[in-house]
Image (tube, rainbow, N blue to C red):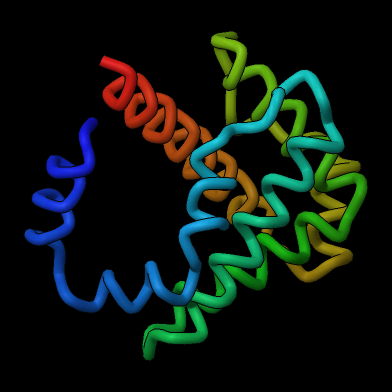
Length: 146
């Protein structure tokens, strides 16, 4: 994608999106578009932490409560090693093209999620959204290279 194409694409975006972009900052947008090595758990966790931090900042700029809730769940999930291990296991499989069955949760994960105040079903929804985000970023990057 050339710069002129990018400018044309942004011209048609809602004006509020520019405020979001300004809040996030181009350096962090670039870091989010630069996907981590999904074989490296620490690198993936840092990338997700950046995404959660950005989500939290963007949520603070809106009047809606749903985005605040999602940001809180993301932060809590990253703070729990047990919950994170489950998330990373599914995300790394999906990122490497493996078929991922989302839905079956073991008792240990349910207990860990509930101990940090997260509904386990919310974690499943968050993982599904994260997988879709990774796919979108990959499609965006493929489009930029062509």
